Length: 198
Image 1 (spheres, rainbow, N blue to C red):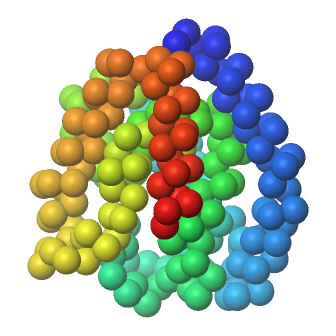
Image 2: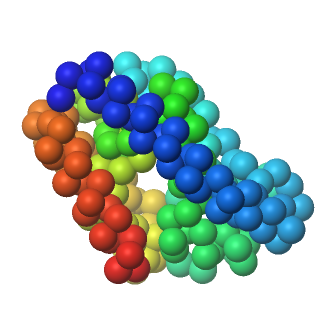
């Protein structure tokens, strides 16, 4: 897929979905604000195309200004009532359509990581970040229940860095090397199917 075609697809899809889902977005915005004090939208610094930093947008799922590990697993007390539902349904990711529209992300592409983890695997991300990060990718489907998986480990952070993240990197490299229009469309269908089955 040429970058021009991919970008045109991203703009058209993100615009269309944002318009169609605008009532849903408004309701979720109100629910997050009503559930706990703080802004409805959470911003987190991520590493994007060619290592350019950007603010990834999500509906806030934790208490405002929550501190602690960058990963969550099990029954994390920082997660709010509405936040738990948003995370399970992946609806907290919807604001990233704005990231796509602005050019920070793509609909399909390697999921963007936080600088801390990118620094650990800088050489691997040099290849991965030749493309825009995405809302969904093969790793998003394989690890759609990541929090539950990490909760089973005696050391979730270590397990993420030594097992989960290297496998995500492998899947991201495979995606980058074989990206195509057909593959992107298949991944979108697989993502929707996975969400419906949850």
